[in-house]
Length: 343
Image 1 (cartoon, helix red, strand yellow):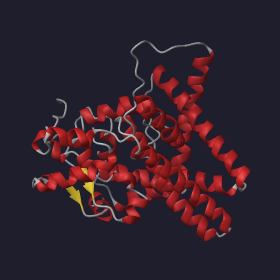
Image 2 (tube, rainbow, N blue to C red):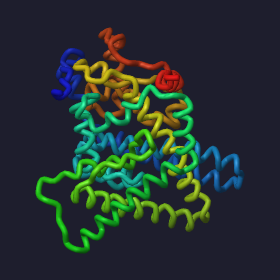
Image 3 (tube, rainbow, N blue to C red):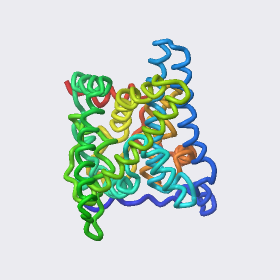
Image 4 (cartoon, rainbow, N blue to C red):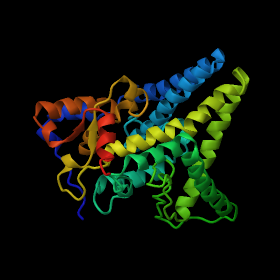
C-alpha cells in the first residue's frame, strides 16, 4: 500500500497561524513534564502520609494516569513537540518521561514514524493492536484482569529484561550493530499491548542494544525514586508508584491504544478515517486520556502539532465543518461498547 497522504494544513490555517500552532513552546512542554512528576509524587506522598488503605487505592488509580501521561509526553518528544531545542527535547523524552516507563525515545521515534506513514495500512507496525477488534466483552474483561493483577506488566518486563541481558552480553563482547541498523522495534514492545498482552517482535542487534540501554535508564530512574522514597518516608510511596506502574498504568495504556484506532477504517486512503478522537471529561483526563491524547484524529492529520495545541486544531476542523468526516466518540465508555460489539 502507498504511504498515507498528508493533509495540507493551508486549507484551515494561514501561514503565520500554522507556524504559531506548530512551534513548540519553550516552557509548556517542560511544565507538563514537571506537572506529571509533581502530581505523581504528591499522590503517593500524601497517600503514604495518611496510612489509609483507601488513600493508597486512590493513589494507585490516579498515579497510573500520570504514568501514562509520561508515556504520552515521551510520544510528543518523539515528534519534537516538547521543546524547540532538540537536545533538551530529547533529554525530556528520554530521561524524564520515557525512562520512567521503560521506553527508549530514539527507537520509539523510528518505529512510531512508520506507524504514521502507513496508518491502518498493511505496513503499519501497530496494525496488530487494532486488528483483533471488535471482540467480545468477556475477552476484554480477561485482558483488563491481566492488567490489573500485574500479569501484563510482569510478562512485558520479563521479555524486556531477557532482551536486555542479550544486549548487555553483546556490549561486554564488544559487538556493534551494523551501520544503518535501526532497531525500530525496540521502542515499542513494552508500551504497546497485543491481543495476548505482550508484543514479541523479532529484534535485531541494534534493537537488543537499545533495549539494554532502555532497561538501564529504567532501573536508574527506579533507583532514584526508591532512594527518595526511603529518604523521605520509607517504602510506601515507592511501592504505590510501582503498584500503579504494574496495574492501572497497564489498563489505561490498553484503553488508550484501543480508543485510538480500534474499529476505524483499515486500508482507506482518506486520512480523516484512520484514527479516533474521543471526548474526555475530568476523570478520563486524569486516567486514560492525559495531556490531550484523546485528540488522536487531529494528531494523525497534523502530527507536528504539540499536544497542548490539539484542541485548537479540533476547533478549527469543526469551524470548517469537517467533524462529520472524522471518527469522534462521545466518551471512552462508548468506545468500549463499540469495540466489544461482537458477541
